[in-house]
Amino acid sequence: MAEIVIAKGREKSLLRRHPWVFSGAVAKVEGRARPGDTVEVVSAQGRWLGRGAFSPDSNIRVRIWTFDQKEPIDTAFFRRRLARALAARDLPGIPPTARRLVAAEADGLPGLIVDRYADFAVCQFLAAGVERFKAEIADALMELSGCAGVYERSDAEVRAKEGLTPLTGPLRGAEPPDLVEIDEGPARFLVDVRSGHKTGFYLDQRDNRRLVATHASGRRVLNCFAYTGGFGVAAALGGASGVTHLEASAPALELARKNAALNQVEHVPAAYLEADAFARLREMRDAKETFDLIVLDPPKFADSKATLERACRGYKDVNLLAARLLAPGGLLFTFSCSGLMEPDLFQKVVADAFLDAGRDALILSRLSQAPDHPAAAAFPEGRYLKGLLLRVD
Ligand code: SAH
Image (tube, rainbow, N blue to C red):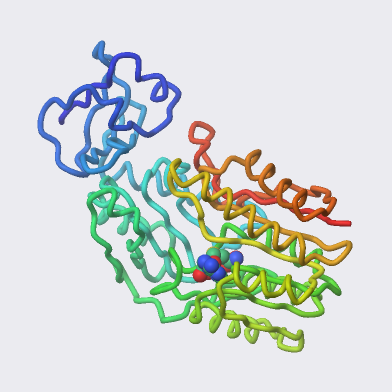
């Protein structure tokens, strides 16, 4: 096995069990290692630090598999990690067949995302290491999850950073239908596992959907960045008096309509607006439209430190528009899924937006991702979704 020697003094994060070795922390590579190969990571003084997956094309040069020197990286290793991940989801409130089974670093499987939709495990292999062990992972998933099929959705852009090309298609067992129906408890949703975003659905917002349902009664709801209508369906089930979905993607909106029908909430007046949210919110503001509850769940605006400032302006703009559209006593559920945006910074950006809008607001709650999307204590970056529930006067 090749050895990755860490630059002097750069081993601190590894000693704290943070699983990433950045290129700048590597002093040298001893021996030959290809992408995905398992390598030993040692300090400048020759102390063994960890064993991980080599990723020569990525700025994250090694992702650690284990901090236990006696643990080999083999078929049994992946079975153990997957069994542990699956067991960690057996908690009240996490639906058995609509849950994230594997959340990458949080489950000691860097680069691997697995979501369960009904009888199908839908996977993203996002790093060279998990790509190398795909067969072992797919076999173990098939066996341990009890799913009828394992389907791959490795078409995320981040794969390019790992020197990997996009791949999608069935890996094991039965092929999923075009739309898989999931049961979230209060609601059912159709998930497009073949061409929906990521693996097809935003399971991370489950608890927040429930919270929206709790507060929706009698309110006129704007579901902005609606995707397939998750928050809107929740609001309608919670007794909203009307739901407006605003979303740029026509196929997503099409599925939002189907999801409303599936949940038998068609008696709740609904509008499906296919538009750029920024432009349409401005038009709504100019027309002096108001809503009693607004959900803002935009896509990731920041994917690197360099884009964080621009992202802050994007979040500020959209929250400012929402702040202006809220009727007195209105509620705003506002989110950011950019991991780089710290919760305190997000809160400041939202507070600035309300200040500019000239509206006093109370922060009622801080929101986050559902507990089947955990973050390892040693890897706080895993906590990417943050949100606020605010009330305006
Ligand atoms: N709230 C959704 C997930 C939202 S993901 C849920 O809970 O399921 C972000 C969504 O914003 C995507 O569906 C994307 O198509 C949409 N989007 C991205 N940019 C947009 C824009 N400028 N205007 C409107 N929608 C946009």
